[in-house]
Image (cartoon, rainbow, N blue to C red):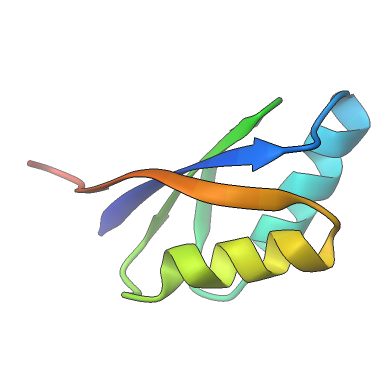
Length: 74
């Protein structure tokens, strides 16, 4: 499993956190570990997971950029 941390622009409130969480949760192959204002932490075994998450967030109206990618357990 790889851990992905995304920096998310445009999040300002609890409603944004909910919308981002819903968008990421509906993305196949992602496990949402944490969503907070400005960032989300995910896990996935898919090589395209960060791109999928970023695309889902764009559809929800947010811009996201990967911060880190690491293999869990290392």
